[in-house]
Length: 419
Image (tube, rainbow, N blue to C red):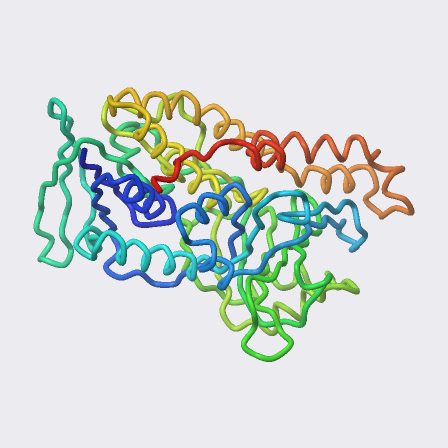
């Protein structure tokens, strides 16, 4: 069996490494000419850390990221609404890592080239279309490194891992149109700061229409500092949505006034913004869930399959899990078409659920409740949101996202070891 993967991002490279792990030949086609360490912070949840560890990348991941120990929610006044343990502190056998997205991308790229060979990671190739011919899939691609020459490649299976603007998905759903804009903009950056909230906490403050997020993603360049990812996010009902881009730089004046008073004893947001040289902007977008990912010998994974809003730190992690589940199906079933169909039937429903939950603020729904019930602040959060209600918000999302410690720790591997 030969597999072709379209897209060399987190999902596509995890797919390639996983197929290599089980001895299946695979070629990856990536549109970008060169792999650049773009982006800022991303969280890799324990379910995805387990998968990368079983790929032999656990030590590399640990060296690049910060093992997050807690997630804390605050209202817009900086009062603590809810905190919960994360990673090993929460009982998982694997940590949660906060890491620079670009460093994660480079790590996966280097591992892919080392294991598969550079000839099987083909950059500068833009996917144009596919055609299923009997028991094969033929893809047409434009080779940007050779005068945009059009080439064809053939495989038994084609996996679309080409992101929220997936050209593979577009061929399957040509009338779908652009991603759905949630009328919110995120401004993001990473900067060295002094540790806050113990140095291993992800903090979210505010409410649905305006909030800040900050968490460390690795050691800083100066002694005693941490590289801290920060996000300022707010509703912008009158602004047209630009096409999201990890490298769209904007001046801080575009949003600074909206956050100039967000100073807490644990974080000074305006000072953080002022000290940052490079700030990136992109819109909050997703796509509506679809009722099918697999079509014969073609399927979708990652953001090509279920592009979600980043609430709950799920997108990258679920993309990794997608690749592992699909690999497991291909290992267990002799008929690749049946394997793709079973992957679709079992994986798509929970991921569609996550997409819809994220539109409703996901696990951060407690912040909106605090804003609606106590906009001026509170003396005791239990008088505002009973603890049982808070626990239900957290546990219901964790369960559907595959983050129950007992279930994750005890389940069999998606991709059994060949040792």
